[in-house]
Amino acid sequence: MRPSPVISAIGTGVLAFGLAFSVAPGASAAAAPAEPTPDGEAATMLEALERDLGLTPLGAEELLDAQETAFEVESEAVQAAGDAYGGSLFDPESQKLTVLVTDTGAVDAVEATGAETTLVSYGAEGLAEVVDDLNAAGAPEGVLGWYPDVGGDTVVIQVAEGASADGLIESAGVEASAVEVEETDQTPRLFADIVGGEAYYMGGGRCSVGFAVTDASGADGFVTAGHCGTVGTSAESSDGSGSGVFEESVFPGNDGAFVAATSNWNATNRVEGSSSTVSGSTQAPIGSAICRSGSTTGWHCGTIEARGQTVSYPQGTVQDLTRTDVCAEPGDSGGSFISGSQAQGVTSGGSGNCSSGGTTYYQEVGPLLSSWGLSLVTG
Image: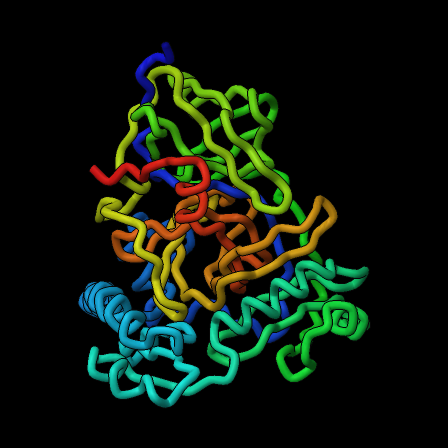
């Protein structure tokens, strides 16, 4: 029988990843604060929201409250929209939720829930079909990835400078009107040193715990990046007292792993430096403010820009990542992404830095939990 496990009291459950992806020119970075706080001095999520989104302490709390309300409204709006649902967008400035619909007949029912509406042609489902066709065709040389921009009702294809996406569009058989091509001067890469909210070690490397989870038998563990270790790889807590082993691992395609704790790791529902505990994993609408905790740069915040990002890099292609304008640096990989008290995912990588801004991607936590029969620790 496996010993009763536990996880480090750090960033609790979900994934930890260590990929770095390219940023397309023009990608937005988190807004500068009115009174900048030096990197590393944002010890909590609220402090990071104030610094990175230019909010007052009261403004940060009001934003989180507004997002919690938006989560509830969205749930009702999705049901009201039915088959016409095309996605949701939250605006941190106006603090309003907009639900995209593909049929004018759904407008009244959706707006009755308190959400605003916008009519679109493709919607999230239609754009997902375009992404699936592109995924099936595969990325030719020079094409770095693609993602659905539900706000723009198009799929953005990122290519290296001077490269073309014409061959990909033709081979995938997608309509040219459904895609937009953007050039970037950066290419996907792996972080050399991956550390998240709190570090753990495997062999000569280190990664980070995402969120604490329990498996189907009720035993503790945590999710992390698949490229951090293959099945059977041993893991050790940062202070050397806790141990575990990789029981599940997948990379590329996705980048996830489940590490079962074998001794002296205490599972909690906290994230390093967070003033709140993890209470669930309700998915935040696109546009929502989101924060990341990492061991190199601490807490940084921004907004969710897109879901369903496909990234092609030398080690392989990873699908279904979420794109944000939160900054990160080598060593932040694996850190927890959280919106309010709701776990969203774990840092997969990005480009740029926390001095000039950047783009960072994370793997959604929900599919990881369901794939391996895991439960997020929330108490």
